[in-house]
Length: 115
Image (cartoon, rainbow, N blue to C red; front, side, top):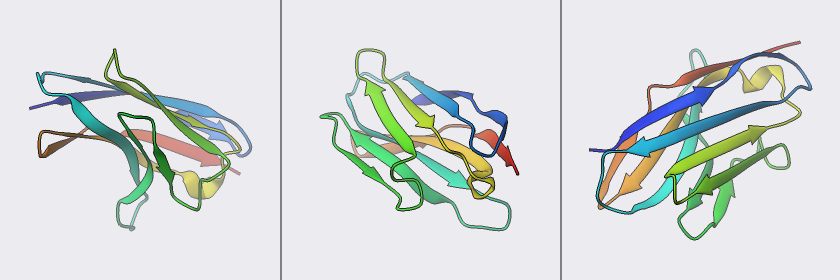
């Protein structure tokens, strides 16, 4: 099973930037895709962004133009650069990885944006 370790996040004022990273380890299989999800209090978990091994990306409409997902395949690490943050971006952000028909989740990291 793949283990995902997230870092980054924290507290920032609206308009600011934060960067998240997620490192995957523990599998001999290639990780086919990695992504970021988020869950705000009282809301369902939602997809933020996803990136395939080939570099194709997909973003939630709410973050397009503000967030950028990238990936270092050698390090099995995915990044999320978040710019122009808004209070509605406040949530716990989770990393997810897909490999060999399975998927794993990270433990989550809190992002809080104050107005």
